[in-house]
Image (cartoon, rainbow, N blue to C red; front, side, top):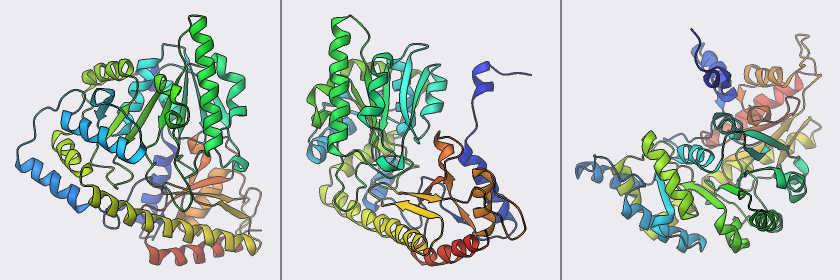
Length: 419
């Protein structure tokens, strides 16, 4: 029995496939260092105690019926204040939409601003834009980025396609790379969009929108600064739809509180779209988040703590790869800037193992690292790049500090066992 053509054509997640291999090895008693998932081990990175207490209190107060379709007013007001105080962005409660995490919001943006056969431009590697474009039955322009630009798109990448696309999907800090837009690049892209929309207005054409996913914006390290299109080019306000929430900065991936904000006519249509799907964030969690975001000192203390812990792990892994590189091993890494990801290169294509097996594909390299180094990481082709890319995402949300030296001992041994 066949399902719809849409369902039949939807590709499975490569990360889930790798997770299957990881679980199979664990079932055999193997110790696996699983750095694949963009999530947190809650025993290492629990949510803030104040947020947890607010959630429990909300359930005790019977906040368990349907929430408002666009999110509880008190939360939208709290988010509005938070954006103003922390980012200098002024969006009213009516320009904000609450949902059960970021995913429904991204889906709603695609469904709201695009018609069938419209075209989405997105860079790769990037998270899930291929799936959202497919589900919305849209065409795509895919920009394969380069390590020289930290895998971030440039204005030169986008400009040749600007007249022919309807949505540009951007993310900074970027999943899977943990890298960010610099100020000049994002300014140039934003000016390009503004100029294109002026041209379209004169010709009575549909506007070009930008989806700006900044879910990791609070997790930046060192001198890295987060920028957004509206602060750099205020005219971008009319065409930028932001995606944000608590899932990453507060290790609250399972709490399911996300928000979008942007032009009110788009937000209202997204609200109508999601009201039919029922993708609400639970009411108790909404009430709790509203209260927590107003606890300025508690929020600042938690962010300082989690950033310190993530930064330590990212730089320990980065230093480890740089040390292996200095010893002549075919590896590299891009210095971490943000999020919980490190971009690493492991160039083993064409190498032969001690058992006489030649590693001919990235899939084989990934499996070799898993079985021989006990290290699970995600190849960039899982995020849309060409399958010969030898770059990987390494996530530190589940890593224990004391395990990192062991990981590099095993990795060095595995690298020594190929020639």
